[in-house]
Length: 185
Image (cartoon, rainbow, N blue to C red; front, side, top):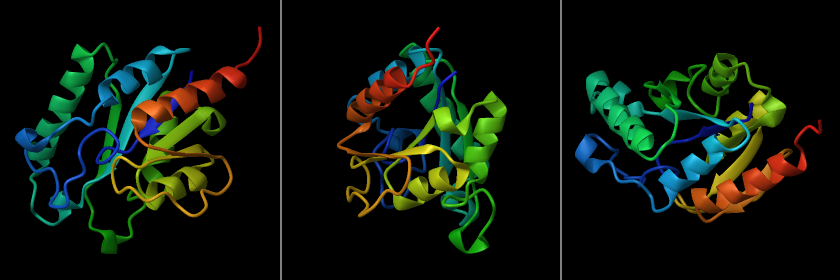
């Protein structure tokens, strides 16, 4: 089984500086639904979404509101033919320095454990250096997309697959790597 772990804001949906606080503010990035279908449909691939959501910790978004946003996201994915992803979030503020908030690898480790996945066969996709650091700390491959915060890191470190304009281009690269490294019967 191949696992792809996706950041949310800037990877799947438009990254809003003032946070996505309602289902009406959720806006899929072009090509993201199709990319999720490709990543989850090949070679038994599965998806997880891991997202820092400090808006909850700051009192800007109730947990029920976040659940509604994620319900909309997973319903849209289901309509696009994507199996329900595991969705994990960190509600803490950055100063909490908790185990789950990226760049800490807590949510990545939790996703790996949930699926019984091997870090060596898992890619973490994000638009911020914190996503790449969480991938590195968990022993996963990392991929940067410029569809969110835009700027590619100066160095992605070991197991870095590169920076791509969006999730669609990233899906192509992840699939090529998986095909090249697939176990042979």
